[in-house]
Image (cartoon, rainbow, N blue to C red; front, side, top):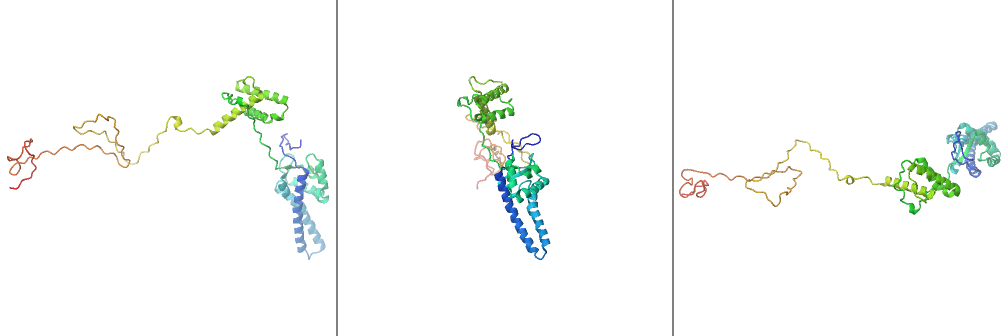
Length: 347
């Protein structure tokens, strides 16, 4: 197994980087580092023109160690195993258990890289990477590290094959509440990879999974249905139920038997009693043609007014004396003549 396995025997699935990608990453790093070293050396040469030869040599060795050796070590330590070339190629340096590297790992790799890469022009590193099963050079062996690929091509999405058309809807009454998620995962994995299995092994696996589903649901499959078709039909039924639950519309008030009446908030202030029933005027009779005629709705801005009753006629005025109209030409108070008005005609 060429992948990364932790100390607890857990397979991480990280893919080790091979020689071509690692060589390209090292080449990019060397171009950047040598360009920086040449610029720094030129600056030191211009700044130390008045110094003696021993001082110039000491500064040159110091700049060599700091730039060509210390630079990659610092970059890998601070970036947790990602130099400029490794970032461009999608690589990363990790420990053998998959964890991030520390300073001691980067120091060992950098120290051995001086011999493997700089002094031998990368020949020793290439030979060691070709011999190693996981593409490790000598610096990786001593440091306990591994270069892995971070950008891995995404696998194609495995789609569960649909059941036969004559099985669609046959399992609508099946109780799937007792089926655990682990069994669903096994069934899905089998259905997505059954074309890659040996026919005999795939048939035995399908029968075992079908027996477990029958035990959980308590309902045997229809007679004559193959185990693989039965598994596909049950999985399709579960997917249909999940889709109905996920995309079902929210229940409305009409679905529960009607529209709820809006809550009324009483207006602040003293309560105004509602007007009582209208009292008909004396002598008026109710219309028999419309016994339940609704009254007009009152205005919301003003309270409804009570019905107006007919005003009683004024009592007759009786006057006595001259000019009071009680003479021979005037009527009496009981209606024997014209009613007195209190107006005296001219003499």
